[in-house]
Length: 253
Image (cartoon, rainbow, N blue to C red; front, side, top):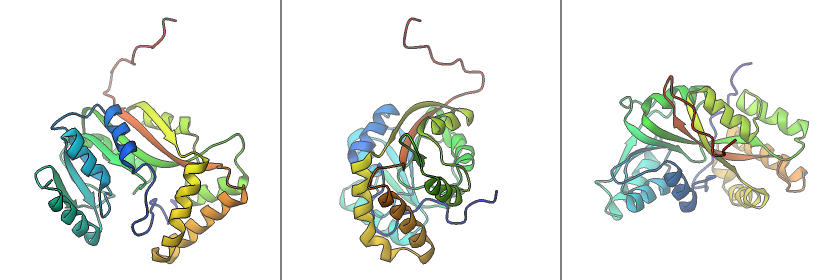
């Protein structure tokens, strides 16, 4: 099957992205065990880079806020200067599909609400950039609920160029790619409804191609009376080394 042309996962303008809240960023930082001086790459920071700001201000991290859109980066640089974070947040223009950094440079890599390559490519590209014990946090579409309508499955397979995964299957893909899966969460019905309501007025800013896909995605959601059958998940995995022993079980069985 050929890759889906509309990929990567993209949202227009200043649309709020899934899992981009300060609360979600703090959860990631705790799971990733980020500390003062930790090196973090926010890949696809957008115009405000909320994660970069939280990680620099509250956790003392050294952050590279990266994006491909120079207009967005100009706004991000202005925000960094206004908050006095010039020494903590380095705003860079990068090729999001082929980010060029040193091997093992980052303690964590964060992709909130955007994806720039197919899942296997993302894992293969980003894992070498993580230091020992480094964490990767990514957003990816998943199927949820007891039954997923065929129309939803077919839509996402066209969209992604691959079958729509369950959250646990997303964790399995992390494991196969050399990560120790640590957590996964997905948007619940009310959260997804709110996300789509906020997104709809911004569709006019999207390209015709992206607008068509987003409108179809939202229409499929509404056909099911707002009950989510597909959603967005945020998964975190720790870089696992070859030959590393599996973690100890948490029970005594």
